[in-house]
Amino acid sequence: MIAFWIAVIVGLIVSVVYITLGVQAFFRVRKDVLALAASGETADLDTASLESNDGTSFTWKALLAVVASTSVIALLGVSPVFWYIPAILAVGSAVAVIAAFLIDARSSS
Image 1: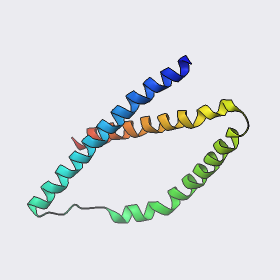
Image 2: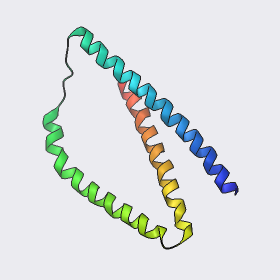
Image 3: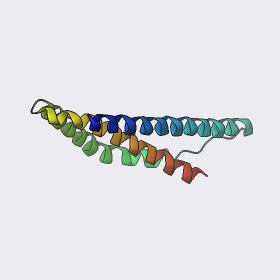
């Protein structure tokens, strides 16, 4: 039962940080877009590099994600112990997004 309460506390902390950083990022991007619109400029996007890298790097990542998801779903039917995996993966992915928010905020300022 102690593991449950530890997970609840960690989950609450991660969710509060996640939402806070997400809202801050939203307002930062909104401010930048409104500043560009007020000055009459448009944002320059490097679409050529996005299009050239899109097909080659995405396919193997998508296939790996499908295999990993299928493996997790299959493990759920094997033993009740594996029911902790989705919760751990959810908190882990939220921490990864928090790290991305922090890195983006540092590179923007």
